[in-house]
Image 1 (cartoon, rainbow, N blue to C red):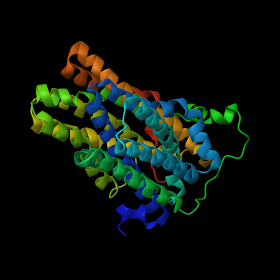
Image 2: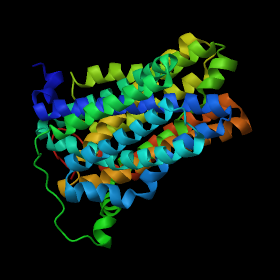
Image 3: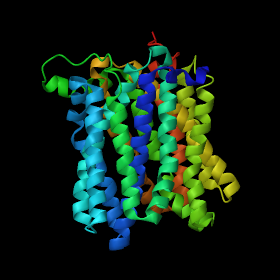
Image 4: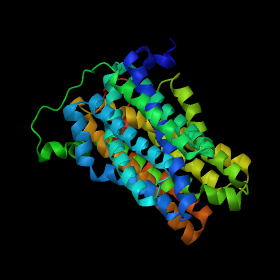
Length: 408
């Protein structure tokens, strides 16, 4: 098997990969379909905001529980039970659609339960991969995990729209079936060799993820770098403005703009799975974050689709490299018995950066204009990369990602 597919030599990882892809795909279908149906029913866009909020809040409110449970009771078990919860929620929404009882409040209640399932699934799934492949193949697995997520988030919304065009129940049925298959694949993974948390549950074990991240400066630097880079440089929320008013591309063009970062990320995955990062990983991380900011500036100043779309592809490509390096560092440098707790904290950072980043972009666009909001955000991201390079010298010294080789 070619080196770029090294992770797929391991049957457990193949099942894990399939489960994670199908679950992500199902979530995208469900989110698009329920969003469209609620808007069709109410004509009130505020419900679209509530759909996202009720799925994010459980991860924030349960951060001290979700990672701890996976470390204590087993990642495969928690991931599987979380997928069962998501499947049941999809089934309830399907039945509501079949019997024509869809309404905003009941749907939001079900989606809150769905968000609880996702809150438990995220740290467990992120931490399980390292238990399924040898350490020398883990960086390859990280790249494929990211490619799986990117593929599902590109194709999933399109599939959700097409299936909803047939009928709402068709879309919800597809989501339910995919989640059932994902659940089955998780439980078909042989019990992994995980170092579970053995000490009694206490305040120190509950907050252990936060304490570890604070003490481990490389991990703290990598997570906080991503937080501020996406918070300041994210431009996704303003793509409808560019498609409509600046580039005048219409709804089809908006689809191209939204797909461009994912396409760039997938191209980058093909490169980094063939030519792994062997040296200067820390410096490459800082460079790619700075280039992410620079590509954002180019997009912000663009007045033509021929410039905007390639710029967004570079945005996605450089972001993919930084995700690859950060996730590999996070998983390999964290002790196995607390990896899920650390990933729970990381998921909050990622969610906050995306949610608050959209809020930042929207408020700045309202105050200064969309172009200024994007361009200023891009330059701010470059500044963050330079500042973090000075604040976290340990990150600059990080070299090889394939082994746990901490800088001296």
